[in-house]
Image (cartoon, rainbow, N blue to C red; front, side):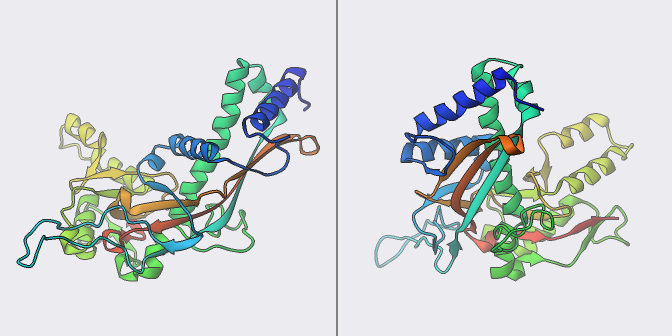
Length: 331
């Protein structure tokens, strides 16, 4: 497959426009992003995936430091005979560490030719940008939910979910506060004699009361993060209950709640994983001033490559507000 004259012209225009926008001679080598461009890229990545818009995605100045405090949970109202009542806010001893993170996506000549013939110049440019942004954004979540360590040399074949790229949220809590993570397999089934719980509602209720710190158990911000396979199994079980009105069953499958908490199924949640936390408790940090980009038309490999380099990492603000069953099995 060769590039058509139109596809070649559009690729040249895209690369030239990217170079001009960032005030560099060309985009074949990594170039640093200025503050406005950093902000634009950050916003574009967040907008690429709905779940990224719900969590704390922030800039930090240091590679390593104390987790950014976004609001200590608990009671802040009372009285003091010695002065005004107040509670200190802070996450003392809770630290983060960023790692060099290099994301690279590419578009084949075959796809570029199709895109070049499918719309206007602007549509072509938007498709290239959207493809790269979504690829990078999804990897940020993939690593956040599956990362266990940061290897010097990563292996995407052995670790297809980015397990070796960085330490994700679940592993952070598991390393620092293992009592918050139930690592023993938990079974779910309609027969209580052969299963630990009869429903996801029962499992979540027990998880909240046994693993979330007591003052925070009724915090309205608590949500349930549940793997897609558990939702699918629970939905099938619900649909099989023929003694219940179909309208009621359908209503429970829309705007889903589990144990009275809003439920989300984020991208790349490991099968069987069940988590209770607040969305603001999950942090994703990028070091300010470290974002670099590269976009290169590589004819020898018949593709257009797009790279995004930065210092990035994950953090959990309050371990006591993160509890999980590592593996729930439907029986």
